[in-house]
Amino acid sequence: MTGLEDFAGRWRITRQIDDRRAGVSGQFCGVATFVADADGLILTETGTLSYGGATPMQAERRYLWRADGAGIAVFFADGRPFHWFSAATPRAHHACPPDSYDVAYDFSAWPRWQSRWAVTGPRKDYVMVSLYERGEAS
Image (cartoon, rainbow, N blue to C red; front, top):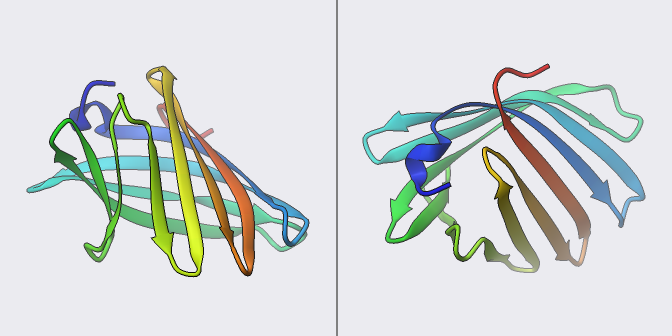
């Protein structure tokens, strides 16, 4: 991974969620698509979320990825800043009081890569690990 353009295209995504506070685990399986726009890439993740004993449901989320110096700035879909990372600095923190979000990216097996989010707060305590691989969802 050298830059923003390396992410363009379709990726299979599998995400494991371990909610320690609720004592529940979940999984998201689907497709992550990075599509170019005038300012960088739009990431859209679509798939099926299975969480605890609940009926599986369709889920989607969207972020904006922008080249920023030697790294990538990630924004929420509405343009609010989320976090910044690079291959040299693959960790980031996002404070959303009273909650705290910490991510560690792993690009060591590129083009297979992962993100690991640890989220804590008064009502949150979960870890979410997402694995991205080139291609269509299975």
